[in-house]
Image 1: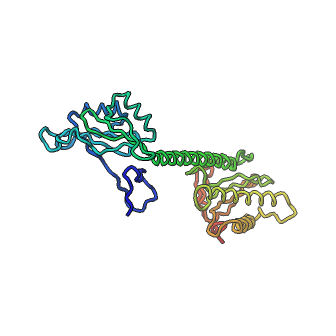
Image 2 (image 1 turned 30 degrees about the vertical axis):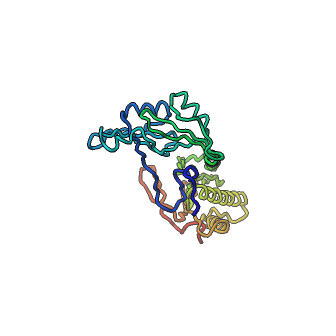
Image 3 (image 1 turned 180 degrees about the horizontal axis):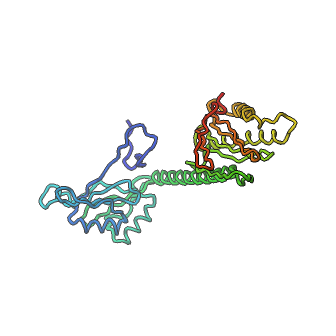
Length: 333
């Protein structure tokens, strides 16, 4: 079996597509004499971040720091004098820090007072390293590998591509929301004997909820409420499809008076809508639909409820009437 050098192993901390359970290294202990003095070294000179500062049940201070990318955690442990752990203070830690810009990080840390025990050395083709010590003499290695740089660049490009894709998706979704908002009634036909209004608040940016006000001519107003099966963009497209069928048929029937006026029988209009919707959508797609026709002159409302929740009619004397379903859903059969 071919052995891979430690610095050439995979470095990504999390792979969402892995099948096994998530598992990563938690902390690496570094034994120090004075936690507060060591903390200042890691924060001020190495540019690390404070990861945690708590107390154990026994009262010991649990102090941890992390490099800026957060993929590793160092625990700064102050052992009791004379213990076996105290003998490890000032020893090589075998901890290695990888960077994409070795000379940049080397010069930065040197200016901050980090003590390097040697000048940068080429360990192998494409690999630079140098050892340094903390305030207690614990030694670490700073390393750069061309493979690391390439992987970091690949991850950065992939991250930027994801951000751009998410930005475009968000923009497209916002555009879709604006387009769908324009599909809802922008004006209300004047009706002398009826007060009415409508509003739609989608659970998502776009969806399959639908309402409409349609001028049917001859002082008649169509009031429509619908709900498309499914959610999101797919439902929004079906909603636009249903709206187009319904409006086109209403315009066709109301503009050709010599044809038996289908709005005299709302069920005939909805049979045509059902047929077109069924022919132009997937087998599992359907819509619940409440269609009503209000006659301004006669002050009469008649309706067909195609599998929708009962509409509520509030009369002038505050009496509430439920307009229950009269048939099955639209587009399924």
